[in-house]
Image 1: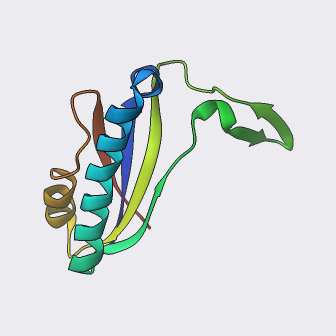
Image 2 (image 1 turned 90 degrees about the vertical axis):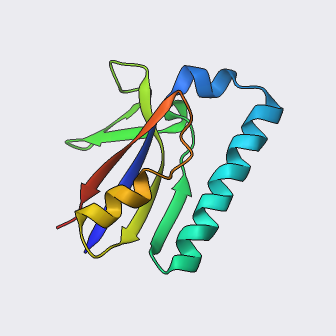
Length: 109
């Protein structure tokens, strides 16, 4: 069964992080991604560009970001192949989101 881990964060905090802190954070995510790949659970993992670089298409109308009414945005995704929700939650609990983020776990159809 496939699950999507949506890595959510306060984008303002993320954008204000200094270069050293950003590199340290990315190193933790790379370590996490290697662990997922080595476990055979990883289908896909990507960091997303800031919401200001996004476009939204609705009824063939394209608009620039940001889109959210709040400061929270999806900063990255992991797609996992897991036995069940319990396993996906266990894996998500190990994601290095820090104090300013969280992980939403969504099963796919």
